Length: 107
Image (cartoon, rainbow, N blue to C red):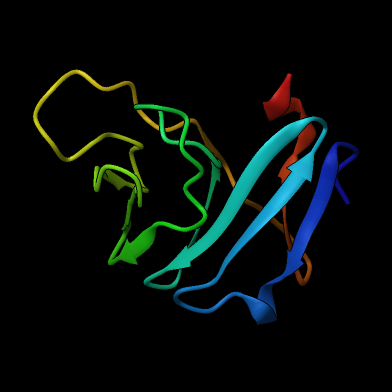
């Protein structure tokens, strides 16, 4: 097991539409499964800091419930015109049967 690995969820529980807010080292994160892929993002819309955990997941995007801004979970980029900053994304690390994060990503 990686020295800096922090488990978040058993991968058997991660199916399309899965979402879970997780507090790790003072960071409010959102773990999502969309189209068989795992994504880990900061649980806030960069537009006005609205929590994304209530957002709609469509394909590999998440739609902010406040202003309906759609973000690509693979890149973090907004799919609307303008100059919004991207979502803060983290790599999901799989160790055995656990999906987690390498804590060094949070420094």
